[in-house]
Length: 387
Image (tube, rainbow, N blue to C red; front, top):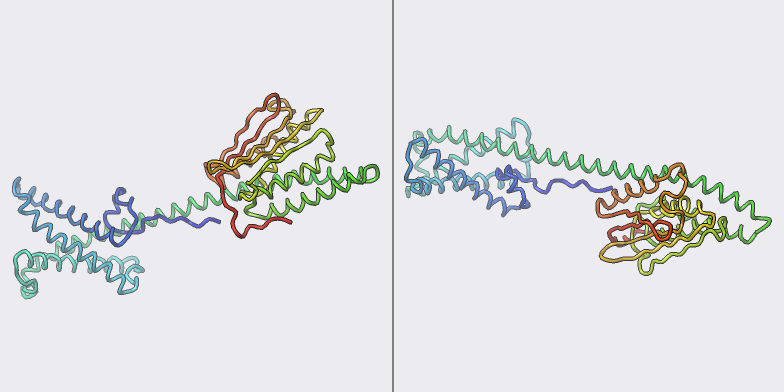
C-alpha cells in the first residue's frame, strides 16, 4: 500500500494565496522573506490609496518611506508573535478551532498592529514610543484600523487553511482512486488465474494418467515439472513482487509440461543473461506465454517455436516473447481472447504508470512478438524466491 502524499505546502502565509508563491517549499527563512514582500505590497497599497483619497499625484516617495517602515514594523511583529507564540505555547494556538481561534488571531494581530504603529512612529519622530501610552487620545484613532487589519488577516489565514484542507482531501482521494485501480487489476489477475489453472490442471492430470502405462518416464517427467509449476505459481500468486528469474522459471515449468503433451509441435528457448535478479510484478509473463501457445502454436498443425529474450538497456527491462505460430488474425477466436493482454496492460499501469509499454509486433514469415518495456527496479532485500 502506498503512503498518502499530502500537499507540499502547509503554510498559511498570506502570499500562499497566490499560486506563484506556492512553488517554493515552506521553511522559516522563506516565510521571513515572504513577510518582507507582503509588507512592501501593503505599503504600496496604503500609499496609493492615500494619494488617491487626497487627490495628490506627486510625492509618492515622501509618503511611501514612512509607510514602508511602519508596515515592516507591524508585519514582522505579527510574524514574530504568531510564530513565537505557537512555539512557546507548544502548538496550542494551532489546535484552536472556531470562535476561540478567531478571537485569538483578532486580539493578537490587533495588539501587534497598534504596537507596530506606535514603535514605527516613535522611530520616525525620534521619540520614546512609551509616550503614546500616557495619552489615550493618541491611541484612540489606531484601534479601528487595528481591528480592521486584524479581521483582514483572519480572513487571509482562514482561507489559506481551507485551501490546505481541500488539497489534503484531494490528495487522499487521488490515493484512494490509485489504490482501487491497483486492487482492481489484481482482482482481474486472480479471476483470470481461477479460469485458466483448473483447465490446465485437469488436462495435465489426464495426460499423466494416460501415459503412466505406455510412457512411464514421460509421465514422471511431466508430473515433476507440473509440481514445479504449481509450487512456483502458488508462491508468485501470494507475492507482491517477484524477479525476472522466478518468472522465467515459472514459464519454463509451464512450457515443459506442455512440451510433453504437444511433443515435437512445441519447442522453446529462454535467453536472459545478467537480468534474472531484476525485480518485476509477479505472474506477468504467464498470460503472454499462454496466449502464444493457445493463439499461435496450437492452431497450427505443425506447431512452432517460442523464444523468450530479456535484456537490460537504457534503464529499461525489455522482455520479448516471440512465436512462429499462426500470427495475427489467422487463428480461430477463443473464449477470453484478448483478456490476458488487457489485464497485462492494466497491471503495468498500476505498477509503473505510463513508464511501461506493451508492444505487439508481427514476425516474418509468421507469428507475433509481444514486447514488454518496464523501468528497471532493484530487488528489495526482503524478496524471497520459491524453492
